[in-house]
Image (tube, rainbow, N blue to C red; front, side):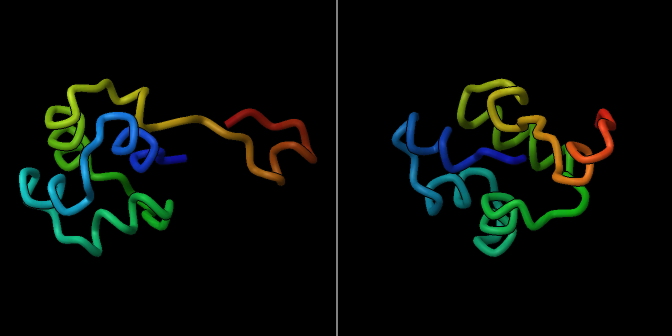
Length: 75
C-alpha cells in the first residue's frame, strides 16, 4: 500500500506543492495516492521522500491481500 496522503497531511504539504517541487503530473501523484500503480518508479519515490524528508517505509506499507489471507501465503 502506498500511503503518501497520510504523510502529506502530517507534513502539511498539498498535492499541488508536491507536484510542483517534485515535477510530477497531478494524475501520476493521484495514481500513487489511490494505489493504482502497478510498478513504483524508484526515482519518483526518491524525489517524494526527499521533499517530504521521510523514509520509504513511511510511504510504502506491506499489507496482506485477501488471497494471501485465505491460503496463508506471505508476500
